[in-house]
Length: 496
Ligand code: ADP
Image (tube, rainbow, N blue to C red; front, side, top):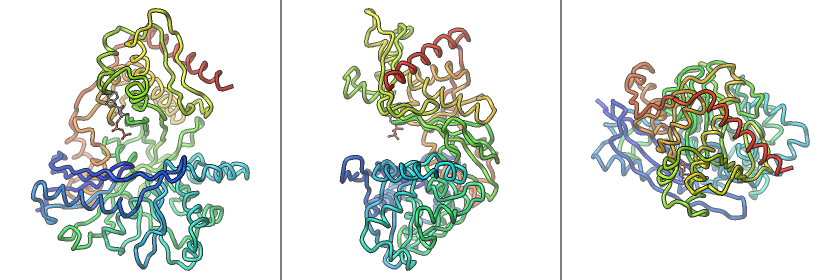
């Protein structure tokens, strides 16, 4: 009997493959970085061929490391960088140009035009998204309008569009399957998340032929089987979800009100909202959550633009620390920030303030302010910003947070996690294995193929790394939060 599940984790900077055993423990991991292309300021591209070859090579490597055969692998789950757009020829499998990466700003002006035409409301109502160049729609339109001959080929039905998951499924099945899952579809800005289908009106607005689009299935679904020559045997592809939704699933946030925060370069927060698609009054996004059947599941999503990046800034630009981990030593060397607040609004400030012109601000500095205080204030700012997103989610959803599940590189910082628990007044729960994105993909594939019985079984397998319980006095929390809000006001005033 097959003993492993393979997770393919196709990220923005690297492709990874992790093999999990029945206890959901990692038994093998391989990773490969690939090239980023910046053809113009603000533009970001990947070569789809490199995405595919790096992904295939790490799959082979992860298997070889432990001598696994295709027959050892019960199923494959895919998780991927979201929104990144690829268009390829159905006959040859050849991409018509490089992939336009989610970060790429080349279509920012096209989004402005949507705004001027008064389409924001229509788009938001149908897709749950606040129109932005991140999402795939304007990227596909750009390719159709700028790559020679592509529009005619698309209109003749010769071209296929896909996010990275579709591209991988296409290649894994040698062009037999052109499909995506609900979570990835919900990031294209072409998908009606309420009716759960491609939206005719949006396709017309963006002038995208419907023949280009992949079939959409639940995240847990038998998408196809791998071509037998790729991994020396046929393996079912049985799970697929965008990275943040996969992390929510990997954190076992299956039910309404459950929230995860991924502390990476930025923070990505998702709150499961059950069968309700909640419309945000605070500029958050409504998106589809992963599941293994047709039942609708939604989530509210919010992000903090600068989180771990502020620690990189302390290290690389301010040169106050040598490693990210050192920030914890400095922060715990003082009892508080001595009244200092740092608002790292380097590129503006997001939910719930939304001001793109705000800039970084340090306030409350006195003669006694030491590097330790400053570093601590930067770490605390990550927790304050997450706090603000969580409170916005609570207001939108009408629930209150009981527990916050965390992962990502900066979740290793114990000081930050304790402060986060204190500031949101909820338990912060860090799993032993913080590879939750890959785990989510593996869970979806494992549940779909019966490798794991049900969600209850997965909950039993969950392993706590560490729990952080709030200990801060109510009055102290209120005082600190008031200080933070004044600091944000100062950063906003600067933008005026
Ligand atoms: P991403 O997936 O966005 O690249 P990761 O999840 O790999 O991010 O996390 C890396 C980020 O976490 C970096 O911005 C780094 O500064 C931050 N980081 C890593 N370790 C720590 C730590 N111990 N304390 C604070 N921040 C950290």
